[in-house]
Image (tube, rainbow over the protein chains, first blue to last red):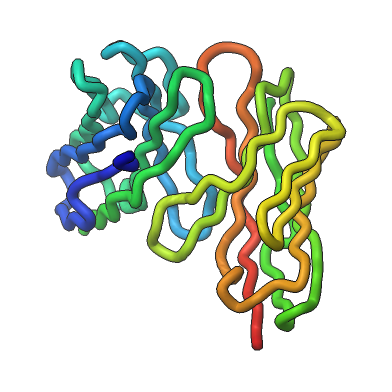
Length: 111
Length: 111
């Protein structure tokens, strides 16, 4: 059984640019959630996708957006990058409301 | 407001010295409480899910317990490979399946 995968592993961008992060969910999982983890802190919920629709959102501005595809993979897009967006971005997949399993993360650095 | 607080922030143990990590939570209704282990720069690794007060789960040297206000992660006779950050998260019972994380406890086990 393949676990959650994310790409790329690392990314460096400059302020004002746009970035797209990708996530493939674990086999059999239909729900994908995205989290942002700043250094030394716990992950913060960004949003969740179920059946290609956003069904929940945390306290993040609209420049954070996402997609879920028919195969349950997902993208996180961030526009107009700010220095504070530098963080580890985590994707987690689950079977509905069951336990969430996390991918290895994408380390984003904004200069 | 739903909230998770973990203590201590950091813990240093000698190999074989047992201890406990604390997770206090405030949530309107609890769908589940989760423990994850996170190594530096990597995604959280699932350890346990607890659903109701009085429940206990064990895995190797780890044992998780749950009351109505807090959870404990007991580490018995730890080894250096148990060194990691341990994250506690709650899933509120209302709405979608988002996780609210604490800041984690950084555990260092020395030989």
